[in-house]
Image (cartoon, rainbow, N blue to C red; front, side, top):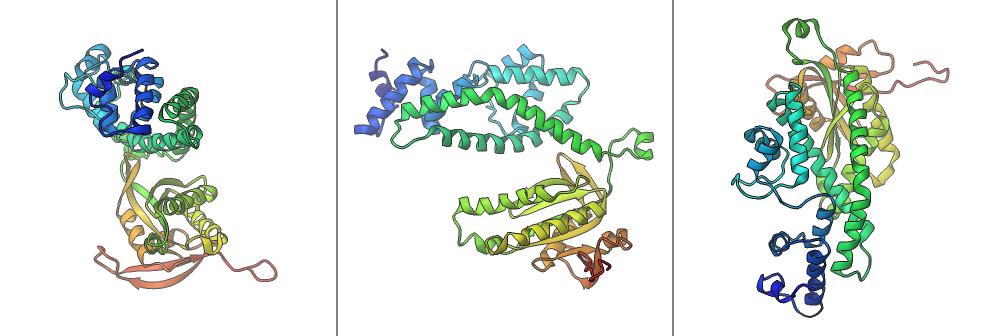
Length: 381
């Protein structure tokens, strides 16, 4: 058995006494003897507050073995490209290129990236992809960490027992993540490729893609800030997540859910009819939730915008956000450009709201409210 005194000498048990000391000693011994962690690795994990998760980290293939220079040399990937990609992914990247800070998984990732480079993908394009993936995968990883911990934790469990159970659960679930991520990515690629249109100008000039006319919608929960003063953070997060779930239940195939921003979701579509239909369906579904869920208000705009890095930019994005800010609870309000696209659409009833001055918009903006058509007893409008 390893000598426990070395843990004291390394300061790994500082400030602990009694049962807490005994539990931590049991955990440290298990991590060194069962998982092969050095005192230095234990010290770093202790300082980071992740000591209970350290065994799981070993199970998913982590253990620092390489420097950034090693990664570049062994993978054939340019050193600057590697470090830029790691930072764009929001992962730790030491400034010292000779510091041992990377694992076998890092090396496998670098080799995969090099294959993309060999296939002709430009480093700048890869960095943009890494930046978007980093945001989403960081959230997914945090959710997975929480999910696995909920599976592993139990009343009265010791640190060592929790570490072993967490590691075993992680080891059992990790092989499923690769296929799941690939399948989900294929589904999303299929979804975005359906809407990718190459114009004659883009095809002739060889530039892909530029700004294009799209409809944009912001759906915002009313009173969310005030709700934050009444609910615990976890409950407030569930309310915001619920809006995303409800949106997913009614979203038209022609519409793309771009992102959630706190208490709002951003939707984009090249088809204004599909966008308005989604907005109407979302409004109705939110109303069905009753008094336990906040009302929603939705602002719509139409115009030239550009999709880049998983986000959208342009005047209609800004305008839709501003319109949402002046819309009443339980209403859908659109600018004149989107209204003009659907003036003759019998599936939408329009009424004029008049002109409004919006923050950050110089000229007054004419607005229209969208509703479902009311039917008489014969089923006619």
